Image (cartoon, rainbow, N blue to C red; front, top):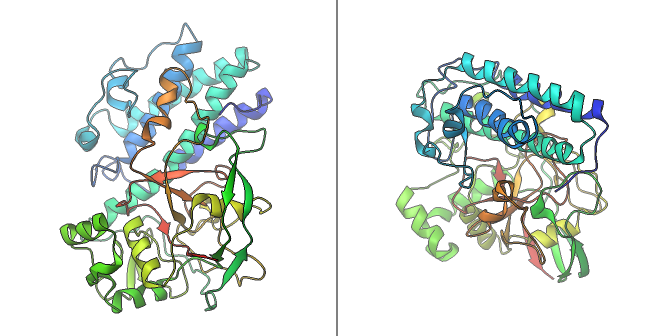
Length: 417
């Protein structure tokens, strides 16, 4: 988790850029947009702005700048997320009840924290412990940039007006390319981060893994292919579903991906309701839906170890946040290996989110960041259309509960050899 110490100016510039990018994502929003919470798993945009500032305030400034003046003594209670060793916190499902502090006050809070981080970097920039904490905080903030957009999308989808976050932008239509499978001979593979820059602790330690012979799909599953699954009775055939998945379908009344409209021809996006692009990847499906589709297609979901085996020499480039589409695009025509391994959609795997052999969480409260969630969740790989490009890498392990659908989650198939 500890990065190589960055040159002082580089770290200060990166800090300013990441913090500015978060605020920029809220410029299209009104104060009213930024207060509302649409479901317990989502948070108001205002809360994201405050929580990321609290992270720097508590873990960096209070720990390393003795003269730091707290902006408000109750903000630790309001904007702590899940760090129980830090103290009590406001209940997550009730974040939308916090009409105060106002958005304007939160922006002042951010400026207060930023000014003192700048002061700390002027005097203590060479301290590797401080550099490591700030770098962790910036990667944490980039996670919240993605969450801010997915939470706003869910919120706007709940509004009968179906408002748009941004103007519709023409997207490449893409050609219809047949789904292919590329073979992998298997063997002993290396899994986990291998560089000398930043990574999260759940990407370590790098270790050997037995990769069985298998085949990986050439691209992500498209809207057209998923619509065929629906029309063939995918949501009404219990034999396709895991037991918990079928129970969820029955309980929640699922009949299609969360943002698809009833006509199966259009979907809600961050640009409002738009026609369903036939060759673009299907997104906002749960692991249960991904697994059921795979069974219907005569395949399975890949393991995270198989997925990573395809990316060791691959450039992690694709349709990410900076492209500005904020929606998946059709993939390029595959040649000798799978495409769309980075960007567009987080890819569900069948792998449980569990510690790698020898994993040890960091000491203290910062150790609550990843390790305590290693239970009952599944790993996703690859990043999405709202993941910052400086945040993603081949070894990155995202994780969600199998019923989660509000993230840009998609499907890649695999087969046994």
